[in-house]
Image (tube, rainbow, N blue to C red):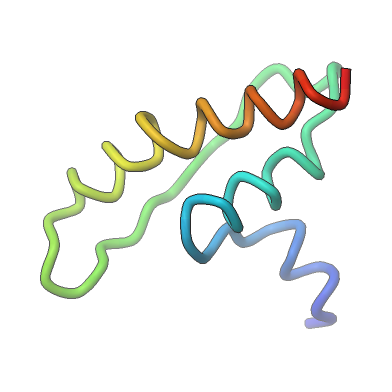
Length: 68
């Protein structure tokens, strides 16, 4: 699979990287998004979900607002 396809279908990395990836592909016509989190070794899945909701989503919102 070409790297650019992976970049548009897989979110991976730290908070900033994931937020940048997501902000790059979101468009006003996208009304729903399915996220399938994977457990980080040594952490419960709830940690991944909590980090996504409390850090990634606010950062995405900030990036989109800055694009304005």
